[in-house]
Amino acid sequence: MVPTTASTGTPAPTTGRRDAPGPRGLRRVLGTAALAVPAATAATTLAGAAARALGVELEVPDDGERVPLGGIAVLTGFFSTVGLVLAVALHRWSTRAAARFVQVSVALTAVSMAPPFLVGASLPTACTLAALHLVAAAIVVPALARALRPANRRQQ
View (cartoon, rainbow, N blue to C red):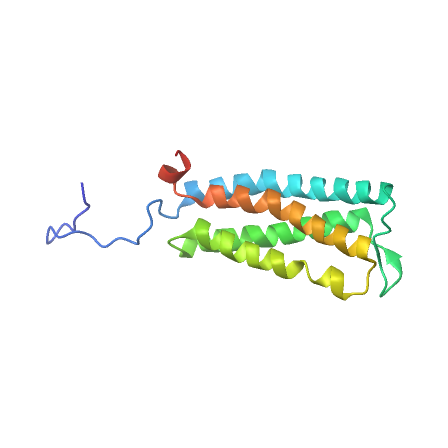
């Protein structure tokens, strides 16, 4: 049944979203992030620790200091939260939130891969740092994209 306006009986205008933004959809996105962000943080921190155990220095030549594992965790958590903010905004204002989120997230992940190679770090360090970006994105992006999909599409 198509919703109609009370006065004219004509079809009511729609927003184009099948799963209109609302508290339930927002709770789903936030709940997903509550699991995905700590998972990405733990995964990148463990991967950084594994890289160190294998002999990768994780040293950025600008200041000559090693990247601390806590720094990896904090930056992963911060930028994953930026992804959450993007997901919430798209949930609110986009008719194709999941698709737009994936497009923007993939582009931002690709851009984030360049700095490790531009700061003069050793090749193993640069590759490891770039890989850590991919690890975080591989956890957060699919999880939030799935949470952004309309309910009738998630069940397929």
